[in-house]
Structure formats: structure tokens, C-alpha cells
Image (cartoon, rainbow, N blue to C red):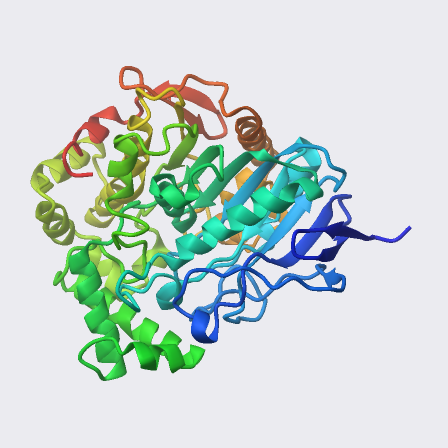
Length: 500
């Protein structure tokens, strides 16, 4: 019997393969036209149908990025493709999980094997879709190429992928009316934005943003600052759109790298507040008009249940971070004080309270703990708080299992939980980086629990612990002893009122 299988999509027939686990894999499926030539810096356009059977047994190219991460596939501007892992292409209506990859909006790929979803498909009957989207200056330019032109192109790519799911996933055994968007870091940040975007309404029915960062949209002032930096890298006074349209990918990546390096230097020297990384979702007045958290608090996306959370110490002072000179400078009381103070926060009060709660920690460790809450845990809580009075509720979690490798230093840092959600510890280089060894049986058991919880949420839109409310603030703690706690570290949460 052949391992290949053909499926008819809206745009043509594709041929996938059955892998060793018995699931069907379809890779490199285009969901939009190549954003090249006149389509560069433009919203995604429809795919041209193909007459023959299209091979879908290998991943497509990854989006252009300076240091490709999580995938060994070649880079190309023609990167708008997705991957489907399904138990069977049989017309059944299975829950669908669409994964939006991490990478600070400048790196990453949906084709990384850690996100393939094989275990979720095998053990829980989910159809898992992982997607690419445009990154960096090509996906999130801090300037408009023409009056009235949208800037959040990477988010529009994500919406185009969700439209593809709506129109095609039934042929792969999925239910287009039961779609969960799930994403880590930049992917979680993206989900908060998608919840606020009218263009995304109705394309997903549950949302699971994981460690989603600030989840803001860049201010006009930040856009102007970064647009000037891009122009300076080009030797111009303002971004030259014609030159940017004609530039090679290598030249664009050089401009992007210089812009990021300039921001890093200015951040370390406290010339700018640490917000407004050069390439993130922006307030362009077309796709996003305000901070996504403000939109959610106002009721946008209120029809979508949430599973939201973070790790326990996202940006703790791990040795691999302290090896970066520019970043190490920001792990200080002075640097954090300048950043938090500029937002109207009581920087000294926050520092003293954290120091009292964590006696014996040095300045870098305390700074890492404060940064972790400011950038990740508190924004996730704000997203859940925005649902406290909504008919569709939020469920909160926190991943507290400490990573033990020498590079990490025994904290539950950013991204330690990704492979636990997917059950992909054995296939992922993350496992060796974070833990320095194969997973233990208790860690495998924790992963099985997390996969089951994610699949239950994707299937039902609920979780098996109390929804988050402003009275109890119940949070599931994922560790070797998994248990729900009410308002964990509530004394530290309280300090951030009015800041995040």
C-alpha cells in the first residue's frame, strides 16, 4: 500500500505521506501567493490554482531571517505556506489546532518538527496546522508603503492562513467550526492582536496564547524612531520605498540587523524604554487601532474562550542571557527603574517588594524575575482579567518546572514548556538545551497531562479547573506536582496595577 495520499483543496490536489506514527503529513501547502515583486509589503494575495498534483511531502521555505532558527529549510520570500498533521483525511470533523510560531517576529518557522503535532494527532485526534508568516521588516515594517496601506502584514498572513483552514481543513478531517489558535511568545502576542482585529473575527473559536510577551501594538512614536533607523541603515533621511521594493533579501536583512543592533545598544544605554522592539505589531489605524489588551478589555474577541499563561520565571538571569553584553546591562535595578518609571510605575517600591519576597537573590536574579512578570506573566493576567465578566471565560496556567542545564541555572525560563505541550521532547534540540538530558518519566507524565489539557480545551472550549475570576484567580500550576492554586504570587501581581 502506498504511503502517499491525495487530497483535493480549493486550489488544487496535494499529495502527502503517512509517517511512522501512522498520521498523515502534508507540508509546504501555499495559503497565499508569493509576496514578491509588486506584492512585497502588500497584504497577502490569493494563490494561483495548479492543474497537476502538488507534492506536499516536504516543508516549504522559511521566511527570510538573519539567523534561521528551529528549521533547516532554505529561506525564501515565497514562504507563505503551512503544514497539516491529521489522523486521517476522511471527512470526519476533528478539532483543529493552528500553531503560530515564536521568534520575536524576526525568526522562526512553522515547519520545525517540535511543532508538527504528531502526538496530539495520534493520541488526541486533533488536526494540527503550523504556519509561516512574514517576519522582520518584510512582515512588520514600522512605516506605510503608501497612504492607507496596512503595516501588520505578518498578522494579515496569519489571517490568510486561517482563511485557508476555514476553506480547506474539512478535506483533511478537520472541523472548520472548531478551530483553536495556539502560539508561543511572538505567536501568543499575535493571538492577542488577532483577537482585536476585525479581519480575524469568526476564523477561530478558542485561543491559547502562551508566554505572549507585552502583547502591545507599537506606538506612532516608536514607529517613527525605527523608521528613521531603517533609513539611516540605507543612508537616507527617510525610508525610500522604491529602494526597499527593489532591494535584495540580503540587503533587507542587513538593514534589519543594523536596526535591531541600534535598538539593543540604545536600550542597554537607557536611551529608550525597553518597549517598542523594532519589528512587532503596530498601531497602523487600519488593522490595529490601539493596544490589543485594551481592545480585549473593551470586549473585542469576547466570544472566544481563552487558555492563557506563562512560565514561572520567563527571563530569569540564566547564564546564556548574561553572556550577551547588551542584555546583561538591562538586568540591573537602575535599568529596570528607568524603564518602569517611564511608564508611571513605582520602580523602587516594586524592587523592594520583590527583594523582600525573594531574600538572598542577587541583583541580576531579582531583575530577571521582575522583567519576567512585567513582560510576560502580568500581560497574560491582564488578558484573563479582560474575560472575568465575559460569557466566554479564561483559564490560567503557569509552568513552574525548572530547567536544569548549566545554561539555564534551575529556573522555569521562557520556552521550557513548548515541547511539553506538543509531546516532542525527544525530537527537539530544546530538550538538551534546557535540561541537558532526555526527559525523565515524571517529566513525560507532565507532558501527557499538558497535552490532554490542551486537547480538552481545543475540543470543548473549557478546562477542568475553575475559570479565572477576580475573586479567586485560580491558576493551574504545571510542575512535577500539578495542582490549581488561587492567585499564586498575588502580592507581586498587585504591585503592577496601573503599569501593565
